[in-house]
Length: 448
Ligand code: MV4
Image 1 (tube, rainbow, N blue to C red):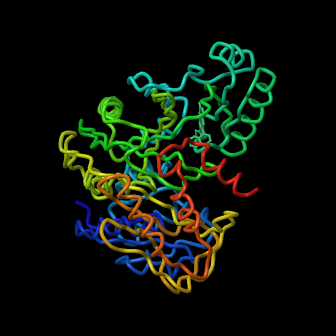
Image 2 (cartoon, rainbow, N blue to C red):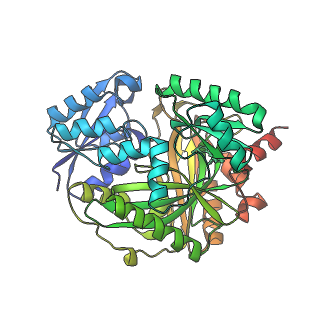
């Protein structure tokens, strides 16, 4: 096992990783920008290193500075968390070259899934159902048109290096195709320096359902069920739940077994998420994320498995500590993302937290990196905490969530808490009847 882990992240996820390290008897190194000198992840770590000014490119994304911090502290592994360098294959590679363990998948697997065309092609060959579309990329308009006509409009033009909605353009009819391709290409080139594109049939009213997978790179891989992340705004998830209100045990086990087998065939190591669109009872793969995700606690709540602890164990060379038949799903969990944003306008609301009173009680978890008297800096993501609630049934979970939200008091800044209080009284949310467009439609309605 490692003696010392450097955590290349900030905020709630840096604390989450520190807690797992602490339980394993591993000492922790925090890194921080000058804007984060007072952050909780710095205070609670065994050691800390200031790695640069506020700008992420000069701090949390700066590979030479992170390497120097490893060198200075003698860290033998790095946990990247989510965001920042968590899916940067080059970072994983450089660490390995310096005999420092990257707590995550191999750089090859990160690279494979980072290119959405090779990812789709790979998983399709492994038996995972994918969205109908171009086989590989499209080189020109004629090729794109032939493909689009064959499957029928509307189609989506997507960037191979994209993901999370960036570089994605809709073509409703043949007349829109050329422009959609040109726009997708130029956006992809300026964002990723790669203008490769591909085409997919546009699904009009799917849910976003993602499977948590886990492998040890030693032949074992399992699935830990799904999360329904359909409630999103501008490609930012707002609320996630497990299990999905739309799935039954048969569908879950059927797809779960396919994704677990695919991960065994790849000899995948670490935590991963297989994203699907789910429409009319059918699953369609869109992307795979090769990292721990923000919403991992809902899976932890229904399985009782500590995903971060397991990431550290397998990175250190251990076998998975459980097999598929050891995993049982219990009850229902919902996560609400608490952002420092106005609940109506979604404008960021950095500043001083003058009062902080998180909820508690049975089956209530709050993961956060802030405290009363902390000043939220304006330079980073607005996520300041996550409220995760568990119950034996979805109804019990909703009752606890309603009660927890009413207990939560944060003063000095605006937060998304009022939005959640509103959402959980909406009949469609209470009944689990929502797709990926539900939230944006709801917000447009309440604006007028
Ligand atoms: C799609 C789609 C419909 N059809 N692909 C958006 C982000 C990226 N991960 C994939 N996305 C979508 N891909 C096909 N073939 C609709 C979306 C999409 C979406 C997906 C998940 C959650 C929210 C979304 C909001 C808008 C569009």
